[in-house]
Every structure is written in C-alpha cells, then in structure tokens.
Amino acid sequence: MNFDLGRTGYLFVVEGIDGSGKTTVCLMVVEALRKEGVHVIHLREPTSESKWGQEIRLRSPKGELTPDEELTLFIKDREWNAKNRISPALAEGKVVIMDRYFFATGAYQTTSTGIPWEDILKRNREEIHAPEPDMVFILDVSVEIGLRRIGGREEDLNQQFEQYDRLLRVRQAYLEMVERDTGNLVLVDASRDLEVVYFDVLQQIIRYIGNEKHLERGKN
Image (cartoon, rainbow, N blue to C red):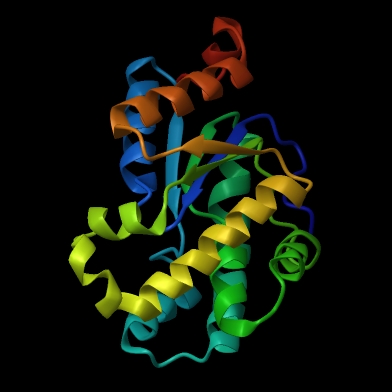
C-alpha cells in the first residue's frame, strides 16, 4: 500500500549516532514551531504503541533478539507507524518531526546483520512504502564526542571498544548515505553547541516549508 496518497504535510527527520544531540534538537525544533502556531507531530521509533515496537523496547535491551529478528521487528513497527501515525498526519497537512526513521535502521542494522544499508533502505521504501521525508538532517559528530555526551569519559574509551567500534561504522554508514542515497539528506555539524545546531535545523525547515502562507496550513 502506498501511504503517501493525499499527502499535504511535511516530514522532517533528525538522525545521528548516539550522543549526536538528535533528541534534544528534535524537542527544541518542535517547541519552536509550536510557539509559531504550527501544528507539529513529534514521533520516535521504535514506537511504544505497536506490538512490534513494544517487543523491541522490551527484548532488545536484554539482548534477546537476533540481528535479523530485530531488523524484521523494526520494519513491521515502521509499517504500523506509517499507516497509523505518519501518513494520517501528512494527509491532514501537519508537520511531522521524527527522531530517527528508516535511515537509522539502515545505519545501525547494517553493522549487526551485514546487510548493506542500501538494501535495508530499499526494503523500507519498496516493501512497506514508508513515506519519504522532505528532509533528513544527519547530525554528525565524532564518536569521541558522542560517547562523552552520553557519559563516557575520554580516558574510558579504550574500555568501550565494542561500542566505539560500532559507532564508527554507524557514523560511516550515515556519511555514505549523505553521499549516495537518493533522499534529501543534509549533513549538519553537530559538534557545535546544540543551540546553534537546533537553530540551523529550524531555519532550514522554515526555508523548506516556505513563506508564512505555507505555515498557516499547519495551524489548528
């Protein structure tokens, strides 16, 4: 099923490795747009609503899922999210801000499954017809910065080799997407103060949506 039929809203996605600041930036952007009277929907994946999202949240932290099982659950959860949350909001002319989407699945699951990120993105686009974002912001930071932001001290990095090594590969996958993917991916220097990063992302969203007349259609 093509969930994009009748789409009049906008879909923006914020991506990045752990510690890139994506969740903080998402929340700041959503708050700023709401203050302007824009009808914004803020979504995260995995969802806490579908049975597949709930299974990921329950079992993944315990290491109970194989990489292939986890990938399948992410895709099923996203199909539910597209049908029940994302597409209805877009059809109503709302602005949807997402904290991670199928690009994150591509970047992270390629490191655990060995499946090329290109194939993972293709599955999301062709198998479940996940709505294509208007813009995807890849918040780029070094792994060192990311780990420090989530609590790892620089002197402890050698003790976090597995996480460090995986995040290196995740970051590389994101950078490859910016260079090679067909979507509208924008690389953002997230090593800067997050207030600066947030304002950068917000201004790009406003420019994309256009003038105040366009913003009006997202109001209540």
